[in-house]
Length: 144
Image 1 (cartoon, rainbow, N blue to C red):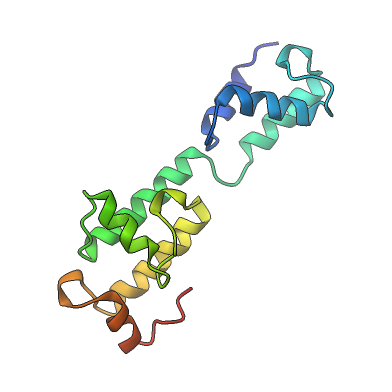
Image 2 (cartoon, rainbow, N blue to C red):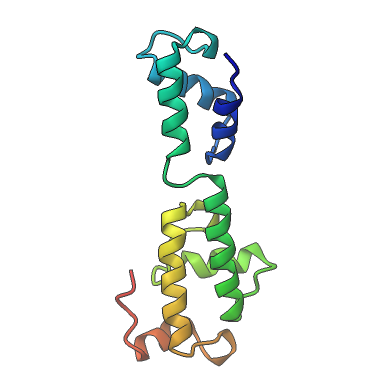
């Protein structure tokens, strides 16, 4: 059995640790704790783990796409997107998301993009005033 399908699907998953550890954890889970080796998986177990990884909601590509969308919207609002400190300070504002940009999942980035579009529609720009005062004036305080 070739393991190309498994490794291709594994490569699309967002991983915050070792890929090898993620592989072992997935194999362990789909074999019911019998093994951590791909070679020892049955064909049925192998098909199940590959299908699950391929149909998973958000992989690495989706995360990259959502990050790109959010950064572009921030840039349009006048946020300096070349400075991670500025990006993180903006995102850490409780009215925006309350955490650093890199800590967002794809779903959270999609929600953040919605908030940024709403702010953009109100006409706010970085050089026109602070986000908080303008958001309060425009009734956007309940954007969480």
